Image (cartoon, rainbow, N blue to C red; front, side):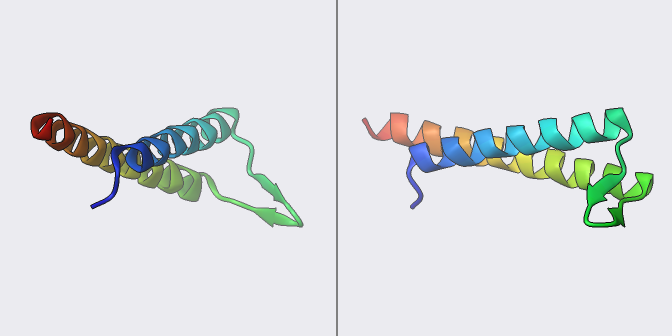
Amino acid sequence: MIPTKTRKVGLWSSVAAVAAFGLTAIANDRHLGFGYVVSRRHQLALLAAAITLCVMQLALYLSAHRKENNGK
């Protein structure tokens, strides 16, 4: 079983990813550097994936947190 502290780190990392992809999508910055460009559709897909992973991390964190509190 993964400890709650590890779940919390994963949750905060997911929140940071959503913020980063969200700011990039809002700013409409398509330049990745090294000559690569990302289309708007792919930016929004990455944002949707980050949001989905964040929601999953939140659900797993809350589940682990409840189990830990019930065991005490």
